[in-house]
Amino acid sequence: MGNREMEELIPLVNRLQDAFSALGQSCLLELPQIAVVGGQSAGKSSVLENFVGRDFLPRGSGIVTRRPLVLQLVTSKAEYAEFLHCKGKKFTDFDEVRHEIEAETDRVTGMNKGISSIPINLRVYSPHVLNLTLIDLPGITKVPVGDQPPDIEYQIREMIMQFITRENCLILAVTPANTDLANSDALKLAKEVDPQGLRTIGVITKLDLMDEGTDARDVLENKLLPLRRGYVGVVNRSQKDIDGKKDIKAAMLAERKFFLSHPAYRHIADRMGTPHLQKVLNQQLTNHIRDTLPNFRNKLQGQLLSIEHEVEAYKNFKPEDPTRKTKALLQMVQQFAVDFEKRIEGSGDQVDTLELSGGAKINRIFHERFPFEIVKMEFNEKELRREISYAIKNIHGIRTGLFTPDMAFEAIVKKQIVKLKGPSLKSVDLVIQELINTVKKCTKKLANFPRLCEETERIVANHIREREGKTKDQVLLLIDIQVSYINTNHEDFIGFANAQQRSSQVHKKTTIGNQVIRKGWLTISNIGIMKGGSKGYWFVLTAESLSWYKDDEVSHRNVSVCDIIGLMWDGMDVWREWGWLAWKKGDQLGISDHGPGKRGWWLGSSWW
Image (cartoon, rainbow, N blue to C red; front, side, top):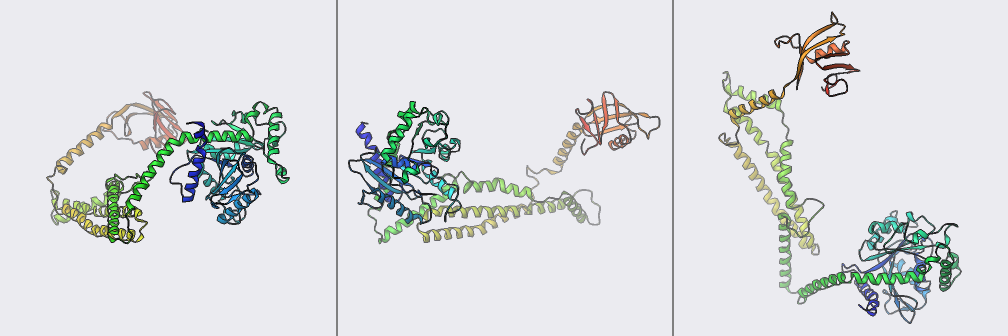
């Protein structure tokens, strides 16, 4: 692409910007642009005025920029300004430009410091400017003034984020040098959306107002907080200069002199100042447009084809033709049916990543919620045993039964099966509710036709409600079928023999699990209540219990763990035998083969 064609890129994007603004929407395209971000009184307005060489922006205390200003600078032999909302009118007096910006801002936002995200489009033609497009955004504020809402800081932040989160937007972060750079509001916001610093251009203002003996050399040399596109330092007019109507050209000469004479900046003076910043922005924006142009063109062509197809569909459309209305109605109803089926079957065009819905939620009801409701049913084993006992006795009557009667078994089992009705009906209710929610989501595409949307939702919901009753009847019928006949020949039926076998296996596992860990003689001494001071006992420690006897014959009296605890409470501190150690430590009792504090069994606490 030649230099001539490169120079035409920015005006081309400007025309697209105007076209989209006139349409009142962006056509879902992100135009390459530069957004100017900074805190209040950071010097944003002075930087933009230095570019133009004219005073044309509103000034004052508090929030001055209350609407985004799309400033398009165009190289031209004549010098004048135009507003998009004042087509055909040329402003040669830049004081009138300032008044028009203020009037247009108040027209949308009100007279008392309100803000709006609707931009003002201003194009400035001048021989002193380079082709450039910038968006001046409201300054970041902390405290609401006037009739501003309490969340004014949040509103301004959200407005700024709307622009700088776009990948096609370069960020001009303006920060005054006489504040801590680490606390810069502009750089903080830029860091959130551009953590690598690839789209951010840093501008350091008020270098002449820094404390004596300090400078911003490390920042301007891109050493302190490095950015891919670097930093540019500028010196703007002071408030005294502005009030005294100091000429901008004279101010720029003073800026040049400042950088050449300052010992910290003279070696980088050729890369500082407003003229260099304007050249950098022109080059950066041109390169940025060139880099994003292929993807931008593809998106634009795709939207153009989509709009052409839509126009073709309505080319022969006659609003009063009843056949067209009928066809459109059928198409919308068919689309509703397709969307509903996709949401249930799980093949929808838009995948919800926030929550389960449609068929996925119904699947969860069947496989998770229904089993959970069954497990949640109250089951009182003691009450069940009592019912079984009463059922058997009532069936035998005056006789003493020898075997468990089948009638008792069936009576108890049928009573348990009937309890499944509650969870089953609740699952039906949950599925019905999810189907109705799905219908409401599918009718959102019919929002442009409120009557059709309402009737479609009503008819389908009524049909689902009608099927609800039949579904519940069918579920209850299935449960009644199970209650009516207990098939004891089914392969899943346990039966008495299998139940006895399982019980034996469980008992066998329990017996094996209660193995003897250690046994032997223990001498217990220093017990005040025992005559002779000491006595020997046969000690048996298993995986589940601790026992001790008067000798090694199990037939003798079994002294329980509680007896040991009682004896040790009465004065015994430590006893040892066969490598085992038992001790009393404070209000704790323990036994171990390694001593206190090691692996063992505590006896004096709630577990051992």
